[in-house]
Length: 136
Image (tube, rainbow, N blue to C red):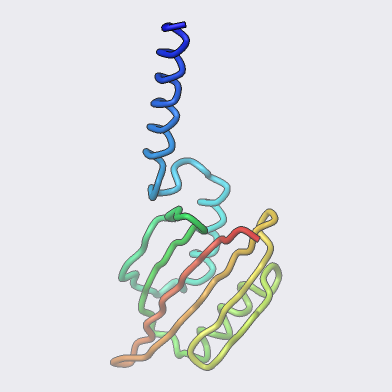
């Protein structure tokens, strides 16, 4: 009986260690999600862009999120038309304005969103992109 109790305690501790260790960490080896987010990144960053910041996909309680920001010499209307064309085959344009757009699609039964926000400064276009995957 003592050996069973000891085994049960050890298994419980091991499970708790695994669960606690994975909380709030980057998405480790889910290459399918990473590949999807890299594909989105490639479709939002034009060839002349200078990347200001970029985060790897992060897993939180309700979603997987990655962000990146860059500057480009493209005009806002040209960039927004180009990025809309990049997503037209597999995303739906949910909302758009002169300075922002939100694209949605089904991603393996979940919802993937791409939010693009732009602002102009000193003749350059600053773009912030948030790519999120939420459970449906």
